Image (cartoon, rainbow, N blue to C red; front, side):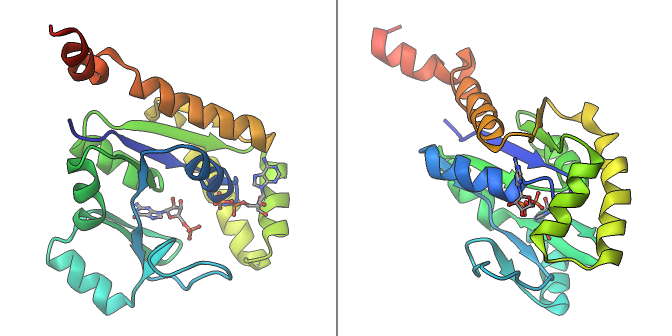
Length: 200
Ligand code: ADP
Ligand code: 5GP
């Protein structure tokens, strides 16, 4: 049986990387789709673990060659999910987590109807602003742009199957884990093993 796709989106600065880091450390059998991006690495980010960092020419060539399941322009840079990063894992039955913006989530839902979409939101726009500032990776102008975009993105919450409010980190991590574990127990996904176990 193929793996399940989990897409997680959040306005920038909500804490998605932090939450996902924890979820990935705690759950087994959960792969991660490493995207390609033209943006520069942030301190601590690693090539091939967080992203494949490529220049615009390489990205454009890959898009023309049809290497991406979906790609989008986000804050002036390009981000894309390659077939390569996704299909090998899915085919071998591994569940895959994708960290995508709202455009990417929409495309994946069209391609993979069974995908599960999770939206992470901050407890308020004021808290989001504080988190963006505390992260210390963006200047004032970038923070303003991200806050404006956040309102528009949050307005799209209805496209997602689940919404998690990242107020207390531990609670948000547990809620994301709970969704993944519940989806793994769906009757359709459990059917092959139940049939095998009980000779049905
Ligand atoms: P994103 O990946 O969504 O852009 P990050 O994971 O980089 O966001 O988090 C943005 C900032 O908010 C970081 O400084 C992070 O430590 C902090 N943060 C994340 N989750 C929480 C939380 N639940 N409570 C307080 N601070 C948080
Ligand atoms: P960041 O630069 O903060 O890592 O990511 C910026 C935004 O791009 C986030 O909303 C993130 O989810 C999104 N993103 C990362 N990879 C991809 C991708 O492959 N496709 C799309 N559509 N969005 C992505």
